[in-house]
Image (cartoon, rainbow, N blue to C red; front, side, top):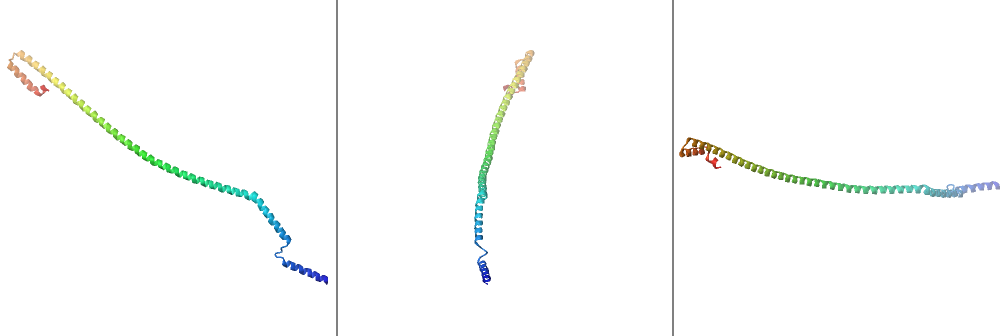
Length: 189
């Protein structure tokens, strides 16, 4: 019986031992778990060195590149705005300059117009003066022709007087009549 009791006692002790372990944790399981944790830790270090560090470096480089691109874009935008302001200023200056050029051209055109009008007036006065001189010369020429005609008529009359032996009273009356017919103003001018 001893064997039966001892077998029952061993079985009872095994039941007690099984019931006292929590989640079936024994030394081998804890040892395996620790080795597994150490292996995972070593694996994480190796992966961190060969996989995570390049990925972190890639992400850091990418974020730096994006930051540089954003900085460059903001600088270029500021430069573009400055150029836009400069060109708008130039356009305003060009408008002002164009207005000044047009104003200057108008002033020069008015000055040229006044000069042309003054020259035309001078030319017109010269033409009128020349026409007056020519008219005066024509008048003088006509007066000379009239005098020549009067002299011719007078000599014809004188020839008639001499040929007719007219006395001096008849001769004086003929000269007076001729002068009256021709006109005293023509003879005097």
